[in-house]
Image 1 (cartoon, rainbow, N blue to C red):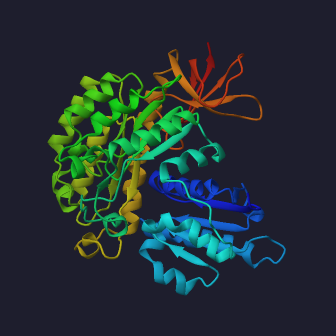
Image 2: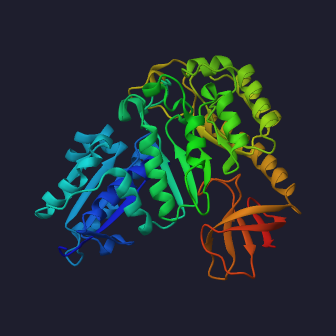
Length: 446
């Protein structure tokens, strides 16, 4: 094997971006030429996998690139190459090249397969090692990731929903599902590499399969993953399922598959029909109400997570008041609220009656204040219950940190608990909840 180059990869943004980063890192590791490091000052190659979904994310990406570029300028640092990839690179490819001469290469989301060749050319290395395919490279990267027991699987890319506020279709293209056998092969490899939770992600997971099979197949995919051989069958978590596309078959699969987390993330964005239609969303308030009731009836105890957007063009005081009352009535288990971001090139950017920033911020604060009260009430109701908790980490003081099936990693609440028996990440402990803090839970393993 050739001498190894050290490489540092930092991913910004969503889980889909995280997976793209893992695939790139895995491809590099699988050559036997590159070794990952945890700190940028140790790296000969630095890769920034950017987000460019909204203005704030783009600015964060720019700031991060400029910060990491300092390692290349430092003559005492080993950095020889700075590469920018991801959504911002796709959306602002030429602008990035022109504005940042420190950057050696700019790769968009469709160029990830070229990462090994690009890095090798910058370093002047003759790369004759065969690169493994994406599935195998995910497994190769997994042991080097911080949380090897949690694996995200991207089941499709792109989007056909054409929401008027969203830049994703212009960045990632049309909706494209991966063949089911390809996903199952990847899932099996990740399970063999000690994955204890598989998180299915896409721009809209509920549409999985419609483009290649002529009908939605997410329910079949959930059942097929659950049937894979495993000594310790992993949890299966479903993220980003648009409510308009959640079918009875999906609901039944979550209800009937024991390892399917009784949890669903469905970004509704708004409750009011007229606002939804301006957003390019086909749903209605009545449809949302019926779906939520159906989910809770067929899957008792399910945790419902959603995101709401405030300040969309034309959102009136009455629209917001109705949205507030909707959230108060539905009592989502997990809720994120975001002010509308006016993005160039989207239909919403040129709509009349744009809402003032201070109004958007006030509306967000009001909804988050409401949700904080709802969340605390729901958390306090868990005190005294015995819940299965997956271990994620352990603090320096020896306290374990984990999550219930109702909590996604790095997104939702955690459980801090004591255990007399030693535990490892991915282990599942039965934890008696003894206290609900401001946001998280506390308990003792029994």
